[in-house]
Image (cartoon, rainbow, N blue to C red; front, top):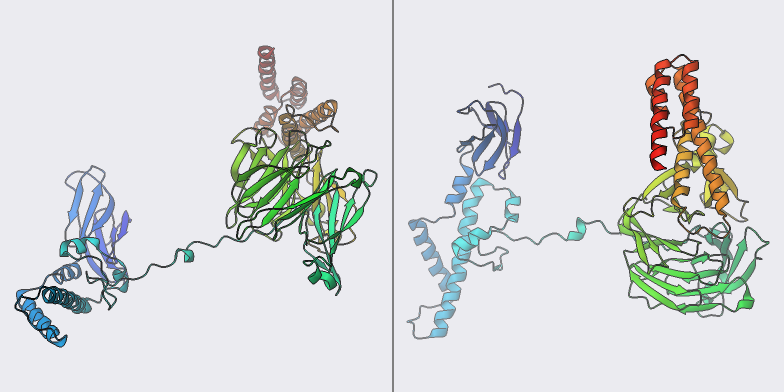
Length: 625
């Protein structure tokens, strides 16, 4: 029998595979691949088969007309025999009675006349145990010829227990009273991946750089303001805990006209840090010790305290807001998800519980925002944004974070001057900026710069092929960063001077490719970012006129790039593409220029359509007035 196209197939619990075509079926033993049965079928009405399912050894076929075919006993033998083995004949019952009698004699139990109640109860228990073992033995003997698969033993049939009147007690031979062997379930930890441990992290931090036998050094934090680094003296490392030795911590600034570099001794093995224009915050992840120190010692604002960590809890990240006034807030996050808030003078002002904290950053404006990255599970992260000054209101809450485990997980994380969160992941080396985050459930990450491609000129400059970027901050449309040469993964000592990389959205393949499309997309993206921030209170160093000037520049770049794309499409006689570009233009002046380009190239129909766009634009402007 030749089968037509397969309509459906189904594998039974007994390991039989049924394959159905338009008007026939075949049944195979899935393990041996042998054909067990095949036959034709047809419906009473003009219907077609849809699906096929098993019920014991029977098949049911559904159809397009609502009719169901019942194909009986397409597989014979095994199930019936197994079911028959559950029942015992009279002869077998007599043999079992004799075996129970022998068992009682072996156990030294004599028949009692019924006068001793304890003896009767004892005999009844022993008889039940023997009866259970006999039934188990009988079932095992009946099962051997059929060679049932071992996995069948994993199923404990509760219906059998009820029908036979047995409970689920387990006897000493490992079998339950219903005759099925019982297995311990595997530990869930084998199926559920273990959550990776969160490493304490501060933005811009690096691992220790081994410089010699006596001292190691590393950067504790780094941002647009400056950097904090520690020299670990190996000779006195064991004395740090006792207080007789210490490491050396240095706080340095990129603009040394505002603050001067200073040093102090660390007796607590600080491994976390955050700094702003007014001071530096340090923390020891394992002990929960935090220390704040003002850059100006004359203010006497320094303080330290120890957090009441739970068993297994440690600090994963710390941060401080960057207000010019003395109203800064300090936030400390832990691996158990605790967020503790302190004012600049060390007074605890709030505590929250979230998911495990990976890192924290805080914005620089008066209306400070806190950006938190949490770990959901292994290689799965989320982020939240809180408004600290509005009763810790969530603006975004546990939104997906596009991060993937890598070393390092994060290369840089910071706010731009308009409070937009920015991040550079360790895996793709791409600068992402969060757009529309002020509107709940509308935030989206926009890739605006592939650092490695731009730095290496898309691989065309062989002298720069091993260069890497270490981001510090994003201001205007430029990324402030360090250049790492010689294939270095982290900045070394001494620190190179920062440079600026202009934003370039990753849509090009070649370095010298036409930039009109990228200019259009960049002006659109950055213009929207600034427009979204107009209702916010601007930082003190940014004037409103400066913001409007930047918006005007992006608007001019937007029109210029679209007109260039429009002209190129007309040159290639791609009029459909040209008109789609014209529809993106938002100003009457630019539409007039596009219409003149079309007329000059004698595409009069296109020019007429652009004229209609101008008229609709005027109508919209009139309605808005």
